[in-house]
Image (cartoon, rainbow, N blue to C red; front, side, top):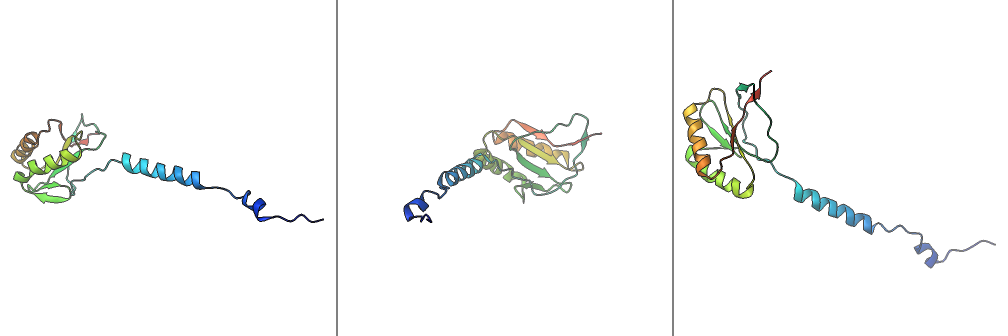
Length: 135
């Protein structure tokens, strides 16, 4: 005699994927919250080389000075007077971030000093100058 399945028996054989979906959504939220966003300076500069250059990890505030004296933060050119307010805003978004200045090898040294002064006035004392590692 053939056995017939009723609707109540068929319901017991379904796989419940609700707990798996809950875990996937929790993992998605975790990765979104823990992601750190790095703001690029927006230009490529020819950095000088140094024997003692070392890589800094973490989310940092990047600022670039080109050879022609342009200052770039967050993919836009700014004036030296706008460095301080921009750094203060970015510091509010990233309180632990250090400032890394990517000065071109042929950028004016006086401008580099002015930019460093504005960064210090913004309340950041952890300032680094980016360099290429010498071979």
